[in-house]
Amino acid sequence: MLQQVQHQHFQTLLGKTRTLRLPDGSELPIHIESLVETPRSRMPNSERMPFRVELNSLQATEFVDGLCALELPALGQVEDIFVSRVPAMGRDPGLGYFYIAFN
Figure (tube, rainbow, N blue to C red):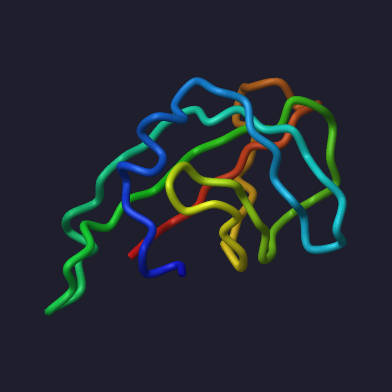
């Protein structure tokens, strides 16, 4: 199912709150911050335009990275999305900041 995910699936979620299901089964409320296409990351013979999604938690979390699940429009629950934490870098250190890369 991951191969079916396109940037359009996240476009309608920009600025919205969703629930990220973490590897341990717990749920983390997140805010979808940005969506950036990364054409220079495109693999030869790949139909999907690579993109990344940036999101932040709405509460404190110890989660760093791992395979998560997220409900996406038109696809439903998508499993095994690798989510990585990034440093707060001047933002609220009480929240978690994350990105997802789709190549």
